[in-house]
Amino acid sequence: MKNPASAQGGVLLRFAAVSGTYFAAMGVFAPYAPLWFQSLGMSTLAIGAVSSLQSWTRVFAPYAWGWLGDHSGKRVELIRIAAAGAVLSALALLGVNAALPVAVVTVLLFMANGGVVPLYEAALAHLLATGRGIDPARYGRVRMWGSIGFICSVLACGALLQWLGIAAFPWLVAALNALLLGAALRLPPQRDEWHDDATPAPPVLGRLRQPAVAWFFASIFFTVLAHTAMYAFMSLYLVELGYSKAAVGALWAVATGAEIVFFWQQGRWFRRLATERWLQVAAAATALRFAAVAGLAAWPLVLVLAQVAHALTFAAHHAACIDLVQRHFPGRLRGRGQALYTILGYGFSGVLGGVAGGWIIERLGYAAVFWAAAGVATLALGCGWQAQRLGRRLPHAEQDPHVQVAASQPSRSENAR
Image 1 (cartoon, rainbow, N blue to C red):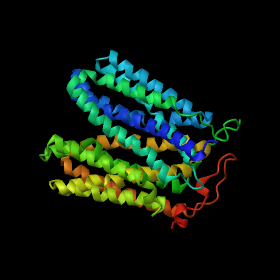
Image 2 (image 1 turned 90 degrees about the horizontal axis):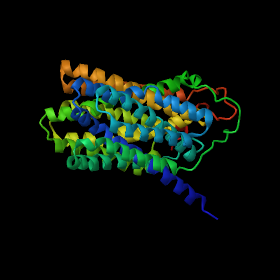
Image 3 (image 1 turned 60 degrees about the horizontal axis):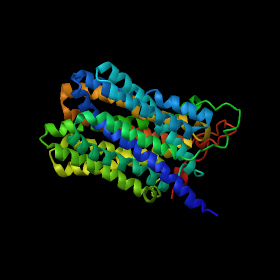
Image 4 (image 1 turned 45 degrees about the vertical axis):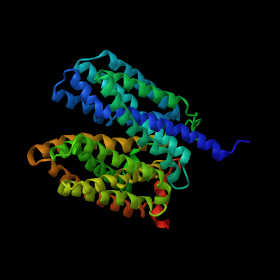
């Protein structure tokens, strides 16, 4: 007889492969797409506009995929369809070279792969669900492969593009998305307990109206909005301060290495604090991190420590969010809950952060945008505290007959060790 723990371990390896290949595909597109756009003769304005399309598609595409997953119960099948769409879109990049066709294909690419993460996280959360959220240790061991895939892709594809030339970029995008499709095809079919039931999936709006849930999403929004200063402007800021490109790359590698270590040890760390507390720790660390970058970036040691803090400001924050989304949006709400995390956390914040950050830099300089990020993270800390305070007093809400409403259960913080 097959050991159930061993069987689940094999399934988790398949989920880890999806995580690794998805973020590997992102690892080639995010840093190198602007260089390819430039090689096609696009203007700086056009490059910025096309590069921002990923954030714009994150505003609506994840929710559409999450809605389909919640209403059909066929999340794994939808992951495969999304991955196949990403491959076809990536192949289409081989046949375009003007700004408008490139923009159209880029939108198609991100509309397709925008479904992978919410569906994947929902399916993984179902697999790792416990009586209260998800198993943090096993989730961290799966999610860290996304970080490994990203950093390996950035380094390997950078070397390949240096050797083959930037014209090889669309081929690499297509190859890595093909690996993603291969990993998705190896996922086992998954059905929630309600998949044969004809009862419609419950609406999600009622959950968003719960004050604790609304404050939770506000905390996510402000924490990620603070990080757009780093994602969009950190490299430019450091180069302006006189750091070499090699030093900038090394600092990014430090951040990714720190998040990998945290994900690997996540089970040990998450036993020390309630999940809601980790949300607040991440926000506080974010405020301190970007204040240090704003005021002390001339000191290399300060920058190294700030990048090490990525373990808290990104990895711990992401893990806490996934656990709380699973508790606030269980069962037939799970896919839409994960999609809302993507939209409110990374869609709107990415669009607003890029535009507002550019406006601040033009008027006040790079340091100002990191001071602003520290202030925004302080708002996130207040929102996280408010979410926990209100979560302790949540009334027993009307429950869907096929879903145990996590929000109506006692807060994990009440039973924290």
